[in-house]
Image 1 (cartoon, rainbow, N blue to C red):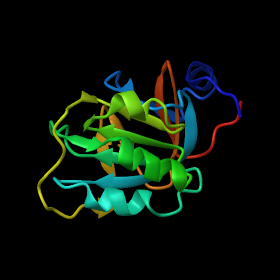
Image 2: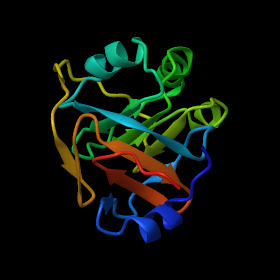
Image 3: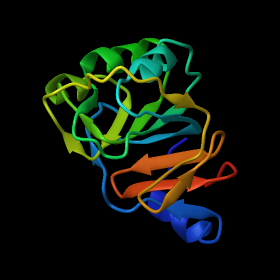
Length: 159
């Protein structure tokens, strides 16, 4: 389905949340829509790795690492996402290997880049509410992203 976030905002002004303009695109897919799977990390990305190695069914992983300045996703995780049918990854954090991530047909939005990978050995949490950029992301909500921005709705939106 072809969509534009601007049109969805016009049609559903009371049914959406709009993420503040904090994200940049680092993936091969420039437009993405799908249901959200939430991940909260406080260090190591092991929980996200395990998630992306599972079947994604066109879903979008929304990852909160509290904007910690280390890379959460690089080209290896993007390959897992692509191979397992994840539509996209939205990260309140940083990425690396962007020359390669831009060649993989998965949407990837993050705050920016950092060459240093995450090293702390901490477990993360799946399927929990995460909040950043003025938006509450809940498991099962619907996310739409394109060049104009990222929006979230509790229900699917039709054009």
